Amino acid sequence: MPQQGNEWSKNLTNIDKGIFRTINGNSDEMIGVGRCIKAGFPCSRVDVTNGRYDAIIDVGNSRLLRIQIKGTSGGSVGLTGGGRSGQQINRAVAQRTYKYSTKDCDIILVVDGRSGECYIIPIGDTAEMGKSVSLKKIARYKENWAILKTMAGVA
Image (cartoon, rainbow, N blue to C red; front, side, top):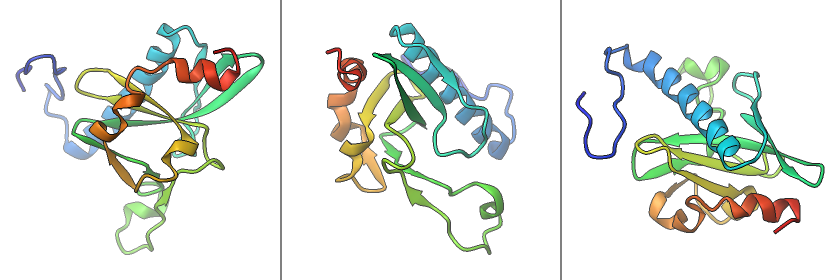
């Protein structure tokens, strides 16, 4: 697939679409953690597959936050989990999808897989959003790393 504008090249080796989806999700998580670190916040991935959060970030003042990293390659991003985990791979099993809430994580970090740009959204701000949201509607969170400092009380 040739590169278009500022968009990153993807799946140049034509890996099976299902396998690539998993690899691409892992890549988005790594990009998100890397972007947090580049912004000056120590951050580590959590090695629990299909957990309620993907990383832990140290925002200062002895405060750690749980981050759910969501990737997108389109104009919107899903705010749900559980859809592909465990038995859900079998379509005959009852739906186990849920919308993320404060019991799951503190931050939704959206990684735009086309550019690496990040949207830093406090989980409380997603309460009024649906199960997915357009990137245009969350534009105020784009590259807004000050949100993390505010959450640590050091703004």
